[in-house]
Image 1 (cartoon, one colour):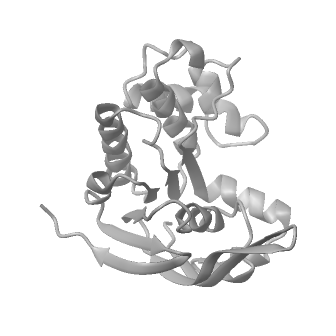
Image 2: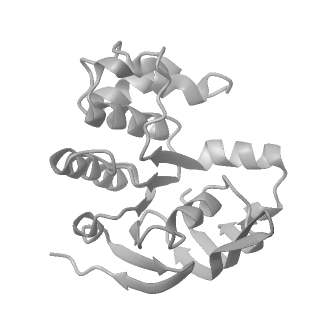
Image 3: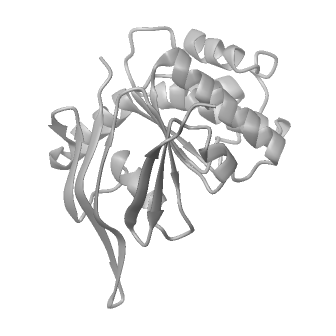
Amino acid sequence: MAIGVKVDGVSKVFKGEGVETHALLDVSAVFRKGEFVSVVGSSGSGKSTLLSMIGTLDQPTDGKILFGAKDVTEFTQKEMADFRFDNIGFIFQQFHLIPTMTAVENVMAPLFSRKVPYNKKERAIELLESIGLGDKLHSLPSQLSGGQQQRVAIARALVHEPQWLLADEPTGNLDTETGELIFHIIHSLNKEKGCGVIFVTHDTELAEKAERIIEMKDGRIVSDRVVEPI
């Protein structure tokens, strides 16, 4: 069953060498199950930090992150890792593929230490074929273009069918045409698989294609609006 996300009064302070950096300041927002949300803002606005909080990659200094009725900020490290595996898929600007593994092996990588009720290799192949990489199953990352590597990363994020797909500048290292293709793939998967998407981007044209846009500045949400369908 799909679940919504509530960010409740979240702040994040980074401390180092006597300096405090307030990356998030009392941020609250609700992300409804299955929706596609773009998060925009200049560098340092807090958008990637917010994504890390929602993705349980980091803990807030104050506030709560709720998935349904579960406050993940109260989880143990193991509970958090298990929850992340079952519910969240990540796509980053850097592809983070393992250079010595083929495309299909990279997609399977999150499953290597897990028991799952499906055939791991069949699932990986099915995903790669669905995004147009059926002829690249056994290619190494060095044999793939940037756009193809990002598609492998998308398949890896989706391999365990997460409730939420969190994308942090996934088109940032790609040319405009390839970036639009990657956005289209993510958008199509949002509709076909029903997974919610939170899409952090600097690209305002891509952001406008989401259902909703959140704008951040200086660690706060300054705008949260629904995008009118074209």
